[in-house]
Image 1: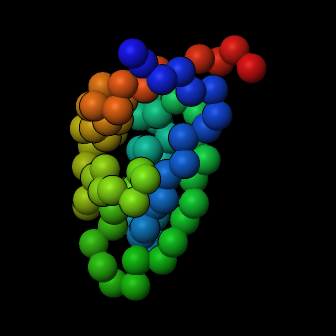
Image 2: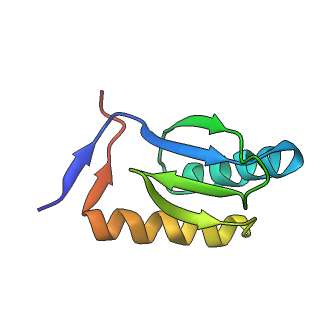
Length: 88
């Protein structure tokens, strides 16, 4: 059985400077391609490697391509058996 989610998916982007800007854009584009609405929280990386978290688990590390982030989102949705609906 799939969970149908209508609320935005909460993600945390941990990055600094230009890396943060790039990750925000890539994560937003990847989510949009899958029809996922996001609520993004930003945190400073303080020199650590950039990463994106969902439910305190690392979705991606570094600065992967948008297509790779999209695939990780798709894998996460499949693993958690979550689907999205824009019926609110």
